[in-house]
Each structure stands twice: as structure tokens, then as C-alpha cells.
Length: 247
Image (cartoon, rainbow, N blue to C red; front, side, top):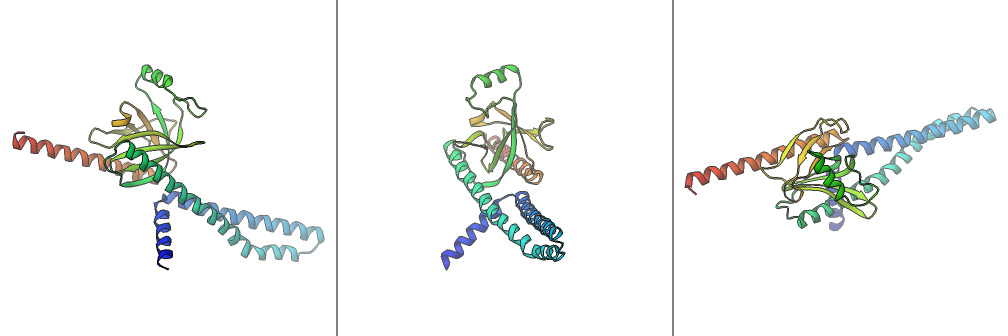
């Protein structure tokens, strides 16, 4: 019984990691599935009743909606919830492996959500270099938007895309006092998108990051700004300490 309780608690913790907007989206899809099934049942029974000239078939169709709606809604929910949890757990696992490999100092995960990224360049020389180093693949297009998983840790930010062979690392940057984040006005990106300049492993690389989930992206923006300011404050305190001690 103890193991069963632990398992339930772990599932609930994993479910809480899913962004609120995706959970609400799944609820909407589940209810829509039940509603469509109910309407289809009413139309089918109504057609049969009209063909046989028996109004009772329509009444039976209306009555059957009381169990058809929850049946299909529950089926959609039972399929969607585990899939969402597994997707987030997979991103968590793969993301941490990349973080270890690139020496991210603090891998305490703050938020995971789905986003959209687009790489941009300061000049034509940078863009041409990116084209020359581009990995061959049908999904690799310079200047195009790409759906990614956004995983922000206290020490770094990484973006993963889904590929046939598994997850692909699109961008990884350490979060430091040198991190440069600014609002983006790219018309191809969602409102509230950010320009992010890479530090460390992605030094020199610049991206625009947005999301179709504005709530999750807003939380990400605030948390990212807060962590950067923490690093800036710590660096300033170290500088003052060094000057005070004459180091």
C-alpha cells in the first residue's frame, strides 16, 4: 500500500509539472469529444426515428447522451493525461542529460513548456556561416520558426525539438550576469516573444523565443529576468567586496 501511495503521489507531482494552459486545453478537448459524440448519437437516432416514423428513437438518443458524453470525454482524458505526463518526463530527462554534458552549474528545473523559436543574425556574414554549418535535414531551414520544448533551469536555458531519431538540442545557454534578453518585435513570432543571446555553449548565437501559451511564457519571462538580476546583484556584491578588501 505504501508503494501504491508513493506511485500516486509521483504521478500527481508529474501532472503538476505540466503547464496549466496545456491541462486546460486537454480538459477542453475531452469535453469537445464528449459533445461531438453526443451530437452524432442524437443525429443518428433522429435519422432512424424519422425513417421509421418513430419519435421514440429521438427521445432514446437524447436520453443516451447522459452516458455517451461522460464515456467519450473520460476516454479522451484517460488517453491524453498519461501522454502529456510522459512527454514532460521525457523532456525533463533528456534536458538534464544535456545540462550535465554542457556543465550547467545548477540544474534545478523551474519551468517546462512548449514554445516556438527562430534564429536571427546581426548581418549576412553570420547567416551565411550558419547556412554552411547547417546539418542536412528536411526540417532545417534558416530563418524559419520551429516548435520546441523550453526547459529553464536555475543555471541555464535549453530548447529541444522533436525529431524522428529523438530529441534534438536546438539551443543551450548558461544564465549569467552577461545574459542579454530583450523584447522582440518579429512579426512572425507570437506577442511577448524575447530576443535571447547565447552565453557559454551557444555564445554568438541569437534566437527569438515565443509561445502559443502566453501564461506559461509570461511566467518564464519573469523568472528568467529574476534569475539574471540575481546573478547581476551577486556579481556587483563580489566586486564591492573585492574593492573593499583591496583585492
